[in-house]
Length: 189
Image (tube, rainbow, N blue to C red):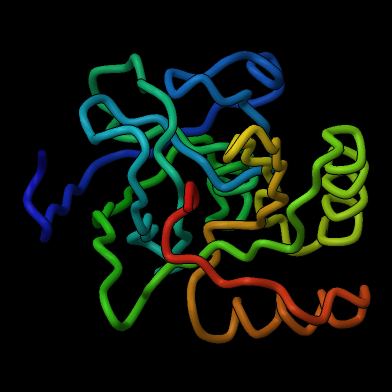
């Protein structure tokens, strides 16, 4: 396990459409529109802030895959994350990655919008949310569980950094008539 203050500086790249839909090392499907990344050694999952050193833009990503498979690179970003940093245009960029341990200044949360017994209904809601939230590009996932022989499919958005990004998301959810989302500090709760 890396130390809580883990930081690394090096070159970031990104991986795109030819991997879209393929399984990542975590078992999740790679989606170019989610804020995810591949790292050689960080635990899966973990969350890192990636800061581009030459323009100071930053993004929080979930490490859910292994890579990059180039010796001179430290992280491979999804297209969404690369685009936010401007790496989609340059191909590579100098970055610093900082492991997030939910510091008070940048806590990440997941927003649960429903818990449904019907998997198909959860899939429909996930698809509708992805379309409605497309400009924000937050990941929307379904977390399935079974308690007391009751299957539940929880539709969750995240990770979302606390502060303005979270407030923007909650405002958009209110516009979509989702008035009572549940905020979670871990995705699998």
